[in-house]
Length: 188
Image (cartoon, rainbow, N blue to C red; front, side, top):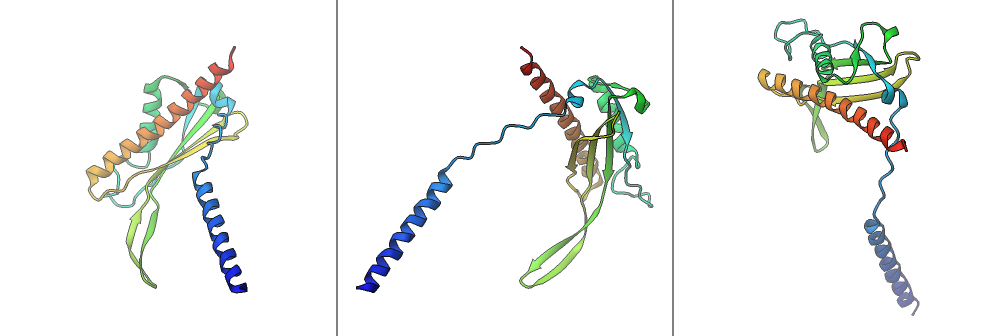
């Protein structure tokens, strides 16, 4: 009889465990409220765009055209064309510092074959990083990174570069738009 009771108890505990797992899976998670955008981003009118650096290749057939300053030049032109901010040329005249950086680190891609790990060759992870700092305190207010999809053909790499830089500008626009929306919602 004892074995029978143990089997029943074990079976009941499995049923209870399964019901609690199903209950947890069905529980809807409430997304967290979005955190506020730092107020200097909200109130900024003048920005200084800073070149945080870019990859300079020692050979003429680098992975991207335009040299090490291409990301800076294109980002600057996009912000100037947007017209939301006045672009200034000295940190003392700016409310915010926008530092754009472009890098193309190589990464090792590993293929896992059972217990053996083989390196399949050098691959790249090109990326933009934008840091937004308060010009007066140099406090980091926001940072974003966008990865560029790698391509074998040069023309596709160039297209991916342009599209990803446009994403960075779009994220800035969304950030400022989010700020403007939250500011207008806070006003009576």
